[in-house]
Image 1 (cartoon, rainbow, N blue to C red):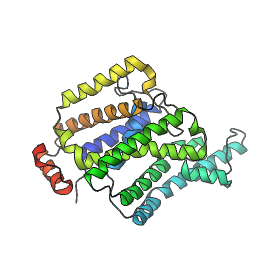
Image 2 (image 1 turned 90 degrees about the vertical axis):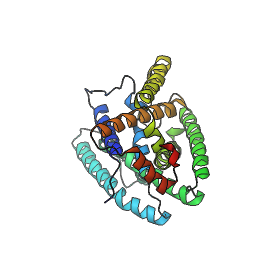
Image 3 (image 1 turned 90 degrees about the horizontal axis):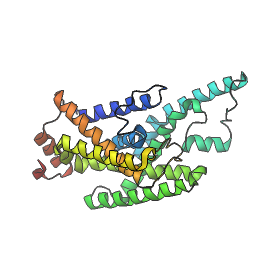
Length: 294
Protein backbone atom coordinates (compact mmCIF):
# COMPACT_ATOMS: atom_id res chain seq x y z
CA UNK A 1 0.00 0.00 0.00
CA UNK A 2 1.44 3.35 -1.05
CA UNK A 3 1.94 5.80 1.82
CA UNK A 4 0.45 9.23 1.40
CA UNK A 5 2.64 12.26 1.92
CA UNK A 6 2.09 13.09 5.61
CA UNK A 7 3.05 16.74 5.10
CA UNK A 8 0.06 17.08 2.79
CA UNK A 9 -2.17 15.25 5.26
CA UNK A 10 -1.30 17.94 7.80
CA UNK A 11 -1.61 20.72 5.22
CA UNK A 12 -5.06 19.56 4.14
CA UNK A 13 -6.23 19.26 7.76
CA UNK A 14 -4.96 22.78 8.46
CA UNK A 15 -6.82 24.17 5.43
CA UNK A 16 -10.08 22.55 6.60
CA UNK A 17 -9.60 24.00 10.09
CA UNK A 18 -9.03 27.44 8.55
CA UNK A 19 -12.23 27.21 6.49
CA UNK A 20 -14.26 26.31 9.58
CA UNK A 21 -12.56 28.96 11.68
CA UNK A 22 -13.05 31.64 9.02
CA UNK A 23 -16.82 31.05 9.02
CA UNK A 24 -17.23 31.15 12.81
CA UNK A 25 -18.65 34.26 14.48
CA UNK A 26 -15.72 34.22 16.90
CA UNK A 27 -12.61 32.80 15.32
CA UNK A 28 -9.13 31.88 16.47
CA UNK A 29 -7.39 33.30 13.41
CA UNK A 30 -4.26 31.11 13.19
CA UNK A 31 -1.52 33.66 12.37
CA UNK A 32 -4.17 35.51 10.34
CA UNK A 33 -2.68 38.89 11.23
CA UNK A 34 0.28 37.95 9.00
CA UNK A 35 -1.28 35.36 6.67
CA UNK A 36 -4.98 36.30 6.41
CA UNK A 37 -7.06 33.28 5.49
CA UNK A 38 -8.63 35.00 2.52
CA UNK A 39 -5.26 35.81 1.01
CA UNK A 40 -4.36 32.19 0.20
CA UNK A 41 -6.47 29.37 1.58
CA UNK A 42 -8.84 28.71 -1.34
CA UNK A 43 -5.89 28.50 -3.79
CA UNK A 44 -4.29 26.20 -1.19
CA UNK A 45 -7.14 23.69 -1.57
CA UNK A 46 -6.77 23.68 -5.35
CA UNK A 47 -2.99 23.40 -5.02
CA UNK A 48 -3.45 20.29 -2.84
CA UNK A 49 -5.84 18.78 -5.39
CA UNK A 50 -3.36 19.41 -8.19
CA UNK A 51 -0.62 17.78 -6.14
CA UNK A 52 -2.55 14.50 -6.22
CA UNK A 53 -3.47 14.75 -9.90
CA UNK A 54 -3.34 11.43 -11.76
CA UNK A 55 -2.77 11.16 -15.48
CA UNK A 56 -5.86 9.68 -17.18
CA UNK A 57 -7.43 9.61 -20.59
CA UNK A 58 -10.11 12.27 -21.08
CA UNK A 59 -13.09 9.90 -21.06
CA UNK A 60 -11.77 7.98 -18.06
CA UNK A 61 -11.15 11.18 -16.12
CA UNK A 62 -14.59 12.64 -16.84
CA UNK A 63 -16.24 9.40 -15.79
CA UNK A 64 -14.21 9.35 -12.56
CA UNK A 65 -15.03 12.97 -11.69
CA UNK A 66 -18.72 12.59 -12.55
CA UNK A 67 -19.00 9.51 -10.34
CA UNK A 68 -17.02 10.89 -7.39
CA UNK A 69 -17.81 14.62 -7.26
CA UNK A 70 -21.19 15.28 -8.85
CA UNK A 71 -23.42 12.86 -6.84
CA UNK A 72 -22.46 14.40 -3.50
CA UNK A 73 -22.68 17.93 -4.88
CA UNK A 74 -26.14 17.36 -6.39
CA UNK A 75 -27.44 15.53 -3.30
CA UNK A 76 -26.36 18.44 -1.12
CA UNK A 77 -27.95 20.90 -3.55
CA UNK A 78 -31.26 19.00 -3.39
CA UNK A 79 -31.20 19.05 0.42
CA UNK A 80 -30.64 22.81 0.34
CA UNK A 81 -33.51 23.31 -2.11
CA UNK A 82 -35.91 21.29 0.04
CA UNK A 83 -34.98 23.28 3.14
CA UNK A 84 -35.30 26.58 1.25
CA UNK A 85 -38.71 25.55 -0.14
CA UNK A 86 -40.02 24.64 3.32
CA UNK A 87 -38.73 27.92 4.79
CA UNK A 88 -40.35 29.85 1.93
CA UNK A 89 -43.72 28.16 2.55
CA UNK A 90 -43.44 29.05 6.22
CA UNK A 91 -42.82 32.69 5.25
CA UNK A 92 -39.34 32.74 6.77
CA UNK A 93 -37.33 33.37 3.60
CA UNK A 94 -38.01 34.61 0.09
CA UNK A 95 -34.94 33.39 -1.78
CA UNK A 96 -36.07 29.97 -2.95
CA UNK A 97 -35.05 29.41 -6.58
CA UNK A 98 -37.01 27.25 -9.01
CA UNK A 99 -34.63 24.33 -9.74
CA UNK A 100 -36.47 23.41 -12.95
CA UNK A 101 -35.80 26.71 -14.70
CA UNK A 102 -33.15 26.37 -17.44
CA UNK A 103 -31.07 29.25 -16.12
CA UNK A 104 -31.14 27.70 -12.65
CA UNK A 105 -29.97 24.35 -13.99
CA UNK A 106 -27.13 25.99 -15.92
CA UNK A 107 -26.05 27.82 -12.78
CA UNK A 108 -26.27 24.62 -10.71
CA UNK A 109 -23.93 22.74 -13.05
CA UNK A 110 -21.43 25.57 -13.59
CA UNK A 111 -21.37 28.03 -10.69
CA UNK A 112 -22.92 26.84 -7.42
CA UNK A 113 -26.00 25.53 -5.65
CA UNK A 114 -29.15 27.62 -5.92
CA UNK A 115 -29.59 28.36 -2.23
CA UNK A 116 -27.16 30.00 0.18
CA UNK A 117 -27.87 27.30 2.77
CA UNK A 118 -25.48 25.04 0.88
CA UNK A 119 -23.58 27.85 -0.82
CA UNK A 120 -20.19 26.51 0.27
CA UNK A 121 -20.62 23.65 -2.21
CA UNK A 122 -19.52 26.06 -4.96
CA UNK A 123 -16.01 24.76 -4.36
CA UNK A 124 -17.01 21.25 -5.46
CA UNK A 125 -18.41 22.27 -8.84
CA UNK A 126 -15.49 24.66 -9.37
CA UNK A 127 -12.99 21.88 -8.63
CA UNK A 128 -14.91 19.56 -10.95
CA UNK A 129 -14.52 21.91 -13.91
CA UNK A 130 -10.94 22.87 -13.05
CA UNK A 131 -9.82 19.24 -12.81
CA UNK A 132 -11.71 18.16 -15.95
CA UNK A 133 -10.43 21.16 -17.93
CA UNK A 134 -6.89 20.52 -16.75
CA UNK A 135 -7.05 16.86 -17.75
CA UNK A 136 -8.27 17.80 -21.24
CA UNK A 137 -5.41 20.30 -21.59
CA UNK A 138 -2.96 17.75 -20.22
CA UNK A 139 -3.95 15.26 -22.92
CA UNK A 140 -4.05 17.81 -25.74
CA UNK A 141 -0.84 19.68 -24.86
CA UNK A 142 1.23 16.72 -23.63
CA UNK A 143 1.99 18.24 -20.23
CA UNK A 144 4.37 15.38 -19.50
CA UNK A 145 7.47 17.16 -20.74
CA UNK A 146 9.26 19.69 -18.58
CA UNK A 147 9.32 22.38 -21.28
CA UNK A 148 5.58 22.01 -21.86
CA UNK A 149 4.94 22.08 -18.11
CA UNK A 150 6.76 25.36 -17.63
CA UNK A 151 5.32 26.94 -20.78
CA UNK A 152 1.82 26.12 -19.55
CA UNK A 153 2.69 27.54 -16.13
CA UNK A 154 3.56 30.91 -17.68
CA UNK A 155 0.47 30.88 -19.90
CA UNK A 156 -1.86 29.89 -17.06
CA UNK A 157 -0.48 32.61 -14.78
CA UNK A 158 -0.84 35.22 -17.53
CA UNK A 159 -4.43 34.11 -18.15
CA UNK A 160 -5.03 34.25 -14.39
CA UNK A 161 -3.89 37.88 -14.32
CA UNK A 162 -6.14 38.71 -17.28
CA UNK A 163 -9.04 36.96 -15.55
CA UNK A 164 -8.63 39.13 -12.46
CA UNK A 165 -8.45 42.29 -14.55
CA UNK A 166 -11.75 41.31 -16.18
CA UNK A 167 -13.25 40.56 -12.76
CA UNK A 168 -12.27 44.01 -11.52
CA UNK A 169 -13.98 45.37 -14.65
CA UNK A 170 -17.20 43.63 -13.41
CA UNK A 171 -17.32 40.93 -16.09
CA UNK A 172 -17.82 38.42 -13.28
CA UNK A 173 -21.39 39.73 -12.90
CA UNK A 174 -22.42 37.80 -15.99
CA UNK A 175 -22.99 34.06 -15.57
CA UNK A 176 -21.02 32.70 -18.57
CA UNK A 177 -18.08 35.00 -17.87
CA UNK A 178 -18.03 34.11 -14.16
CA UNK A 179 -17.78 30.40 -14.96
CA UNK A 180 -14.86 30.93 -17.37
CA UNK A 181 -13.02 33.51 -15.25
CA UNK A 182 -13.21 31.42 -12.09
CA UNK A 183 -12.03 28.27 -13.87
CA UNK A 184 -9.14 30.14 -15.51
CA UNK A 185 -8.10 31.74 -12.22
CA UNK A 186 -7.95 28.48 -10.29
CA UNK A 187 -6.41 26.24 -12.94
CA UNK A 188 -2.99 27.85 -12.44
CA UNK A 189 -2.93 26.66 -8.83
CA UNK A 190 -3.95 23.17 -9.90
CA UNK A 191 -1.01 23.12 -12.29
CA UNK A 192 1.34 24.53 -9.66
CA UNK A 193 0.34 21.69 -7.34
CA UNK A 194 1.25 19.17 -10.00
CA UNK A 195 4.57 20.88 -10.76
CA UNK A 196 5.34 21.00 -7.06
CA UNK A 197 4.87 17.24 -6.85
CA UNK A 198 6.89 16.51 -9.99
CA UNK A 199 9.78 18.97 -9.82
CA UNK A 200 9.88 21.29 -6.82
CA UNK A 201 9.02 19.47 -3.63
CA UNK A 202 12.39 17.77 -3.22
CA UNK A 203 14.16 21.12 -3.52
CA UNK A 204 11.73 22.99 -1.24
CA UNK A 205 12.08 20.30 1.43
CA UNK A 206 15.79 21.15 1.60
CA UNK A 207 15.28 24.87 2.06
CA UNK A 208 16.03 26.14 5.55
CA UNK A 209 12.68 26.24 7.31
CA UNK A 210 13.44 29.28 9.48
CA UNK A 211 14.78 31.40 6.61
CA UNK A 212 11.98 30.38 4.25
CA UNK A 213 9.28 31.18 6.78
CA UNK A 214 10.94 34.47 7.71
CA UNK A 215 11.01 35.40 4.03
CA UNK A 216 7.29 34.68 3.63
CA UNK A 217 6.51 36.65 6.80
CA UNK A 218 8.61 39.57 5.60
CA UNK A 219 6.84 39.74 2.24
CA UNK A 220 3.39 39.59 3.81
CA UNK A 221 4.15 42.14 6.53
CA UNK A 222 5.45 44.53 3.89
CA UNK A 223 2.34 44.02 1.74
CA UNK A 224 0.01 44.53 4.71
CA UNK A 225 1.83 47.77 5.58
CA UNK A 226 1.43 48.93 1.97
CA UNK A 227 -2.12 47.82 1.09
CA UNK A 228 -3.77 46.81 4.36
CA UNK A 229 -6.93 44.70 3.98
CA UNK A 230 -6.54 44.71 0.19
CA UNK A 231 -4.26 41.74 0.72
CA UNK A 232 -7.47 39.71 1.06
CA UNK A 233 -9.69 38.48 -1.76
CA UNK A 234 -13.01 37.40 -0.29
CA UNK A 235 -15.66 35.04 -1.65
CA UNK A 236 -14.03 33.81 -4.83
CA UNK A 237 -17.25 31.93 -5.53
CA UNK A 238 -18.32 35.14 -7.24
CA UNK A 239 -14.83 36.47 -8.09
CA UNK A 240 -15.89 39.97 -7.06
CA UNK A 241 -13.49 41.07 -4.31
CA UNK A 242 -10.16 41.50 -6.05
CA UNK A 243 -8.20 44.75 -5.74
CA UNK A 244 -5.19 43.72 -7.82
CA UNK A 245 -4.47 41.31 -10.64
CA UNK A 246 -1.04 40.27 -9.30
CA UNK A 247 -1.21 40.63 -5.50
CA UNK A 248 -3.47 37.53 -5.03
CA UNK A 249 -0.89 35.34 -6.78
CA UNK A 250 1.90 36.68 -4.53
CA UNK A 251 -0.03 36.18 -1.29
CA UNK A 252 -1.17 32.72 -2.40
CA UNK A 253 2.46 31.73 -2.93
CA UNK A 254 3.67 33.11 0.41
CA UNK A 255 0.76 31.57 2.35
CA UNK A 256 1.10 28.15 0.73
CA UNK A 257 4.89 28.07 1.03
CA UNK A 258 4.87 29.21 4.68
CA UNK A 259 2.37 26.62 5.81
CA UNK A 260 3.96 23.87 3.74
CA UNK A 261 7.28 24.42 5.53
CA UNK A 262 5.54 24.55 8.91
CA UNK A 263 3.73 21.27 8.21
CA UNK A 264 6.97 19.71 6.94
CA UNK A 265 8.68 20.70 10.19
CA UNK A 266 5.87 19.24 12.30
CA UNK A 267 5.83 16.05 10.24
CA UNK A 268 9.56 15.54 10.73
CA UNK A 269 9.35 16.26 14.47
CA UNK A 270 6.50 13.77 14.84
CA UNK A 271 8.51 11.13 13.03
CA UNK A 272 6.41 11.03 9.88
CA UNK A 273 8.73 12.88 7.52
CA UNK A 274 10.40 11.01 4.69
CA UNK A 275 14.19 11.09 4.80
CA UNK A 276 15.37 13.56 2.19
CA UNK A 277 17.66 11.25 0.22
CA UNK A 278 15.09 8.46 0.02
CA UNK A 279 12.45 10.98 -0.96
CA UNK A 280 14.62 12.46 -3.71
CA UNK A 281 15.57 9.02 -4.98
CA UNK A 282 11.87 8.17 -5.38
CA UNK A 283 11.30 11.43 -7.26
CA UNK A 284 14.31 10.76 -9.46
CA UNK A 285 12.85 7.44 -10.57
CA UNK A 286 9.29 8.74 -10.97
CA UNK A 287 9.76 12.28 -12.27
CA UNK A 288 13.38 12.69 -13.32
CA UNK A 289 14.39 14.98 -10.44
CA UNK A 290 18.22 15.27 -10.55
CA UNK A 291 19.98 13.37 -7.76
CA UNK A 292 22.27 16.33 -7.03
CA UNK A 293 19.37 18.17 -5.38
CA UNK A 294 20.07 16.37 -2.11
